[in-house]
Length: 125
Image (cartoon, rainbow, N blue to C red):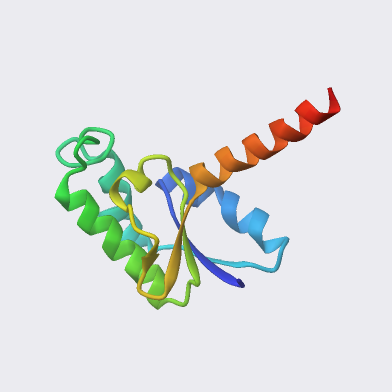
């Protein structure tokens, strides 16, 4: 995999956490355009009328549609996978693929790595 898209809060995007880490492994990061980030992604997390932080169970349909559109945008820009780089986004995007791109929940990956590493530590004790 050489190209991945990232969905996250505006803070996550501006911090460039994913591009800095993934570029070390030869992976290009595709992010939403500034308009898509400002009009669709960030509000889908924080908007008090429909954002996931305000409506998580169930997630508001508008947040689901906006985030799905943003993930589709990343897929069409050439992302082979889309990383859900915010803990709230997997509540709205609960499928394994969007178009030809895999969906990767960063929180699930982190949890799996923590379990794997804790098992290694148990074997050392």
